[in-house]
Amino acid sequence: TVAVRGWPLDPPQVGRWPLGPREAVPESFEHWRRDLAALARCPNTRLSVSATECIFGMAWTAEQFRPWLLAAIDLFGPARIMLGSHLPICRLSHGFARLYTTYRELLAGFSVDEQDLMFRRVAADWFRVG
Image (tube, rainbow, N blue to C red; front, side):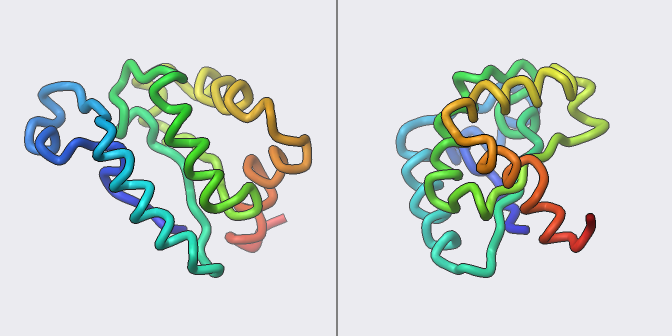
């Protein structure tokens, strides 16, 4: 699992967290995407997507999350993405059900097989379960 810390952060914002919201800016998105693309070129890596509330704040929205998630999937492909929550922390935000509903909405354009990869099969293979 590759954990990319600070992924949609504007570096000047880092010192202020958790005192204020962290806002994504175009430069930070491009920097993150460039760095993630380098990791994605390593075929033995998988990307675990979780902790949305730690990245976008407790009041995160699907619109904030959409470009980052879709870019990650574009770079790694559905066969190398694992979707997760951040239990129990996500309960302090919108909760587990809202997070997974958001995942489903954002991934509606992917096939059932691709969604199953991201929701279940990649993690099962990576962690050698099931």
